[in-house]
Image (cartoon, rainbow, N blue to C red; front, top):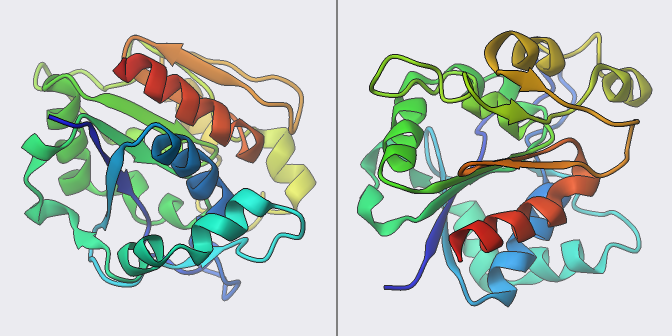
Length: 224
């Protein structure tokens, strides 16, 4: 049976409660997905509500990987018609991936239904990956023993310094670094915009957009 990866994306199209267009940051999705596709892996894209998923960062000059994936007809169909997460047959998936972007801070970061699906996948042996703000989707994940998924795990995620540099710190619903410090066994970071991937057990996290390719590679390596 071939490996199939479930990609979970946000339905929230804005930066927090502002009217600033947002959603999933495209390069964090496309750069990891390019690694999956290079290895011949199949994928589905799902969200809480299903349907068209908002993306931003779709016009970054010089990013050929981003441009090529966004132009792919299969990808276009899947991002325009995301599956409703709670209707999925989880037996199809060997991995789940949360790309970042600010949108999921408003929905996936507190959605109990999707969190339960991710817990079930993990307990069934799936690899769990997330990058940048994507680890916010792991915050509500609680295992069947009552412990948070991240309780004994070291994680990376978008840092306070990067929020300040990006100008988002006063617009976001909560500070991811602070939330991960409180939830995870250890929060690890390096200097702003330097790539960092933390792979511990079957949980793989990356600090920022520059880490997306590395998260994809680490997930593929863990899948074997």
